[in-house]
Amino acid sequence: MKYLIFSDTHLTPQFDSRKFTVLKEAIEQADRVIINGDFWEGYNKQFDAFADSYWSKTLFPLLKKKKAIYLFGNHDAKEFVNLRVSLFSDEQKKNHVLKSGKNIFYITHGDEIYPLPDFPAWVVSVLNFLEDSMFKLFGNRFIKLAYSRMNKAIKKKIRGKYKDNEFLVMGHTHCEEIDLPNNFINDGCIKHGFAQYIFIEDGVVTAVEKKY
Image (cartoon, rainbow, N blue to C red; front, top):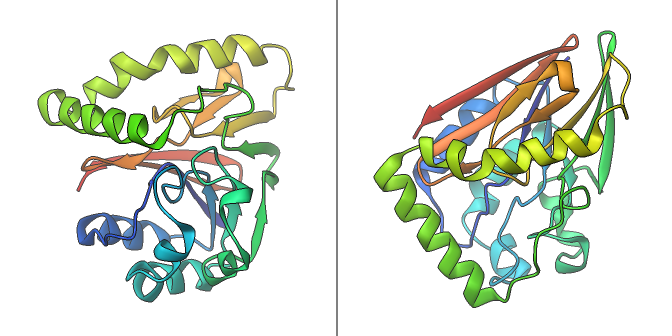
């Protein structure tokens, strides 16, 4: 079975046709989908507004067809949602264990491993604007320069925790990385015109990175 894992789309009630196209293309290649947190932006938006948006007519049916598993993040925590999560997912939880081939993948958003400050909504909006501006200036190099240090800190924190065939799969840092010797995988983000996500099939991990 081919699994798609993506995170950190930070969707809002405003529909984004380019982001939808890249998600649709990825979802249609998979047998099953795992949404690894921060699917929608809960810090300054209401879940019902998101659930009522055009995403419900376009993206949600694609995810339901793939029996999506929805893992809560810090921007879309469990307390932010209601039963309408079933519109786009069949399972909802904080962590998921995936056995594929000879490997075991422990999938979680990552906010419990590397907590970030609980910023007020206006600060989140400012940070998002600054991040978008840096993307426009420097492209995806900005992510590697700004956020790869968080991946390094997490790898140091989990050192020795997993067996050779066990891997942590997370999002949260917005920085895609596959470091199998250190049992670490980050599925990246889909924001600001850059898409990063991973596929897992028969225990093999493949990363995809593209502009949209």
